[in-house]
Length: 566
Image (cartoon, rainbow, N blue to C red):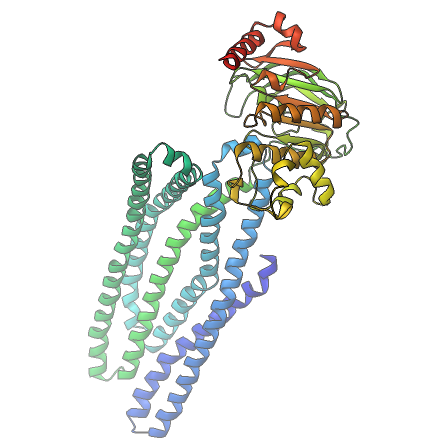
């Protein structure tokens, strides 16, 4: 709130001044009736009337400025919380991200932060106005007629009991409501991201049913919560009007006997209305506060989550070389006791080209994700440049390890902008060189606007093979010491794949290259090939050696050769 402390302080002060002006108006009105009209003193009526108008104008002015300041403080605060939350998420490891769903994180960054901003604004205005209005109005009512103010002994306890009962039932519903919003966001995101798949399989009707189920669940939960609020309003109105009727009865008798003026009765009723309306205002505020408390719980859950990946106090910032060593490495995913990787021992020389192959689910990708510390080992250690990866500055480590995923993402903007993710200071010549190495320049050069060619969200205006080549070029611009290609040429034809491998061999001889592939042709020219099976290294050697020594490798090779023959 530091940036907005001025607004956060001024808003409630101005709100109190507005309340003072509002409280003065019923008293002035009673003076007009009991003094001005009773004595037929027009000059007094006009004088007090002008003071009332001035008080009303002051109340409006204070109210408008207070609202403006409250909005700035409330939504400014929400903006700062959202920024802190976003920065925290950016620092999460893959293990942290596995804990929260993407849809849930989106809801927390948007819906929950907006709710927090709205309630912060209400806290600076409504939560100040209501108690001060109630207190000042009660003092004025007691000043006018202390005996008649005894009606509050009955009405206020009844109001409090109703509020406590309803609010206690509402809180769990608001918590459940936010979870239902998460579920709706999840299915919307999933459906829109995969809309092409949905349409190609003609599953629109099925998706509508799935969405309707979650949408209806959200609606019913919202209705339950809103029903409580709807029920609260008529109950409060009954209490307010019952109190006014009691005041009219007892106060009317006092007016008849002459112990109370007509104007005093009118102002007393106005003060009663202000007191009870303040209670209604507070009840509405508490309703919103309950919803915000659910949002706060979810926001704090993210902020209090400690990143799984932590740096040592004095981290190493320079990598000696691109060598990689796995020493007795074991790994299992969060919330799981089953080891995904078991006793991995492997040394990769700096500048070596290493192929990794194996059946689906053999933990090939998991193995290489330990190198840039996307995950941390459970047992054993991973060394890069002869130092444990846990001793490195994370940014320095990841700047020197380029990772190209099979389904890597392009961002909306231009080709040049996407390429500069690898190196924000890269020149056009450096970008073109990287595109040539990745065999992407052959199609990029055909665009009239070249590097200024527009990239749609997700790179949807490029084919799968084109996207893979562009993401490889982006990784090369980092000038890394280690480059990891995680099945990142799967959508590229074999001829282009061979050109990419040849370019890597000839132009990146000093860069350690790790290639995960499903096709033997993508890795058969590697210096060595690792064959993975159920989280363990089954075999290690050159292509020719593995054909004779590894049954798994031979089976993969022969099945692919038969496929080519067909």
